[in-house]
Length: 294
Image (cartoon, rainbow, N blue to C red; front, side, top):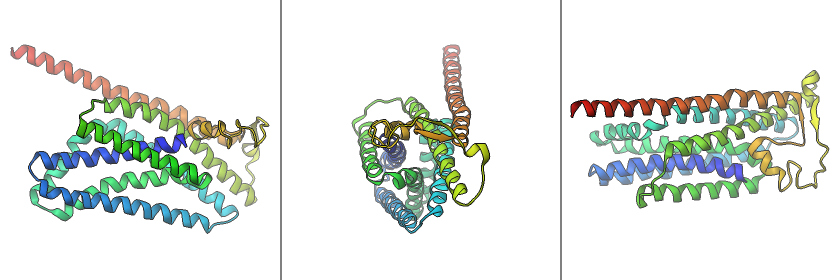
């Protein structure tokens, strides 16, 4: 449930922050009559996200046998792909989020295009909703109750934090927050990549496709299913979601899991550190110019 909470919290927070930026800009520029059109887009995006999630759930329910393993494997790997691109985008472009959103809203509201404003707020919020559905789908298929509880708690916590930031005025370093949550999400995505490959390996086995030594077990901890340390137990399930822990894994699963981490972790750290250095250089340049002007 912790992993599901983190995913839902991160995505819902992004949607909440973007929505707050739109509403705050309209209020600040004395365009309050347009606020309701922005809300229309948000409501439609939330509804569309629920419809999409329900459709995927019923689609999965109609599958059986090897088709289920294929669906779970493809869904997990696709979620990893989208999650990775989102992490990278936020690491490299997140600091410009407010300026970009305000620029788009300014262009739209200046023309008085109410439909365009509704469409814009719908797109930016539905994008986060779509990502949330994609990320949670593999977990929903394995643990529906835990996933739903974690998702609702994550969304609720994100709304509280967004309210505290924009209404109460709580100070928080958004960049550092996204940096640390990005590291956690990379760890989660690594486990998800391994899980997706595991499901595809099972599908290959059921379909008569031989994987050779890649399909053999790299390790088997021989932990009974009733143990709390089993990957479906009380303790093990937490590590399973957050770090891809499992009591036994094929060589191909281990290889994909650690290859992803070896590439994604250094990349995310490098992009964030690069952004911090660029900001520090900009501050030094600004201070130097101010000193020379004085």
